[in-house]
Amino acid sequence: MQTNLFTNSSANSGASAAAGQTAVGTNPLATGTETSLMFTKLLVAQVQNQDPLSPNDPAAFVSQLTQLSQTEALQKLSTLTSTNATVLQGMQALSLGAQVGSDLTVSAETVSLSGTPARGSFTLGSGSTATTLVLTGVDGVEHKVSLGMQAAGNVPFVLDPAALGLPYGDYKMRVETSTKESPPLELTGRLNSVRLGSGGAVLLNVAGVGEVSPSAISAFNGKSTVASSN
Image 1: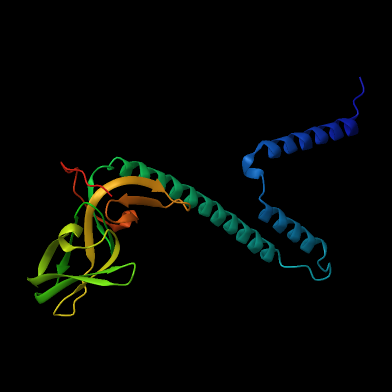
Image 2: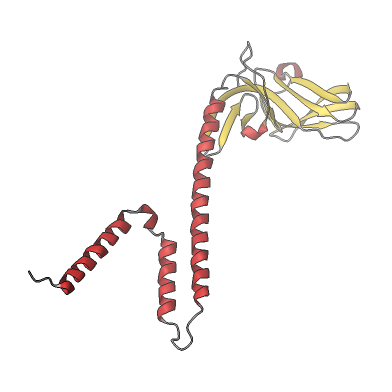
């Protein structure tokens, strides 16, 4: 029986090439991104068009391939980081959702007064002989609530619109002291709801405050016996 080595060699080469193509096609790691494909085309063109009498340094090609690998690795890391951030935001929303109905203390610069008194506090670094909480309405009118002499430390306050003669609505808040100190303010209210914003950020709706980010939370106070309302 006569064997044609040339024919067998070609057939084997064709089979090997087909197998190689199949392996590459089914390997997700071999699927190049648009960036890698473009880079490969440029590299091939660079090799084909180099001066035969003065070829490029092979080390330069190796350096370019290394840069490509680093770029692809950074792209994959960026995608993975973005995915992890989305997952973490979802987990944070679920975790905070379990706190709906509880009282939270959050940093706030505004207060929304309605039928229920708003409770808040601030911390003084030094004593003040004259302490005033200034509320500015949307109409620009200032309403001053005197808190009198206060020692250094935590200063709680209650804003009852009925007792203070204040109309319902939103007010900006600030503190004036005899020492010219301007401490940040905190309000305590019920967590009414938790939602994901358009950009994926977690937003908390706190009674008397409105929507704030989780970073504004300074304390979880549990569920009160008498629920607050908006």
